[in-house]
Length: 126
Image (cartoon, rainbow, N blue to C red; front, top):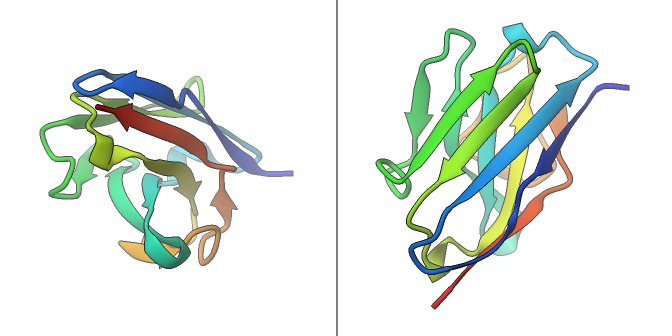
């Protein structure tokens, strides 16, 4: 059964860092973009970062310069290094992938794509 699964969330003081990891299994990882979504109001998810199959990256303006996305095709993992976390970064973060389609910028959390993780809570405390 194909899946993606996040790990690495937690609570940090303002200005702290966390590294999220996403393990993928059961589909052709090297052919799939990997995306990181942040849950917003009304259970809608914003694509905050993605790493393409060639290793190029995309960042939403809200995290550009603060977060870094990467992938390891041998380990079948994607990563999100989150630096300088603030209380406004507090949310559930999801890893998502779909080898058959481009990742959408706004999407219902858990919908529209083949593979979603269970989500991991990130809390930045003041």
